[in-house]
Image 1: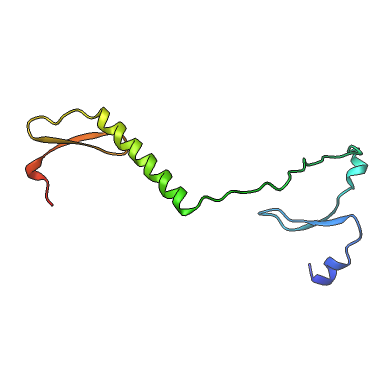
Image 2: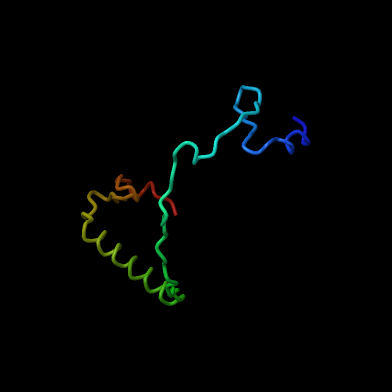
Length: 107
């Protein structure tokens, strides 16, 4: 359809386009003619007042990170078993452990 034909479509008529089919012009009835009604009050969204936001400063972030890191180190030391026969036990973040000889470690 040309732009002029689209502009001259009567009220209530629409062009329906589906994938794999040619576009067709059809009449779609208004929702009131189908018997669809809405409540007079309608749906209301609860009002959320503007809340004051507190941003952490650099010192607060550093203290929090150090405190959290020290807690993790302390808990890991408590859970760790002493190494045996010159082997060092290493633990990954996902919880898997593996052992390696001190001689194979390179610096």
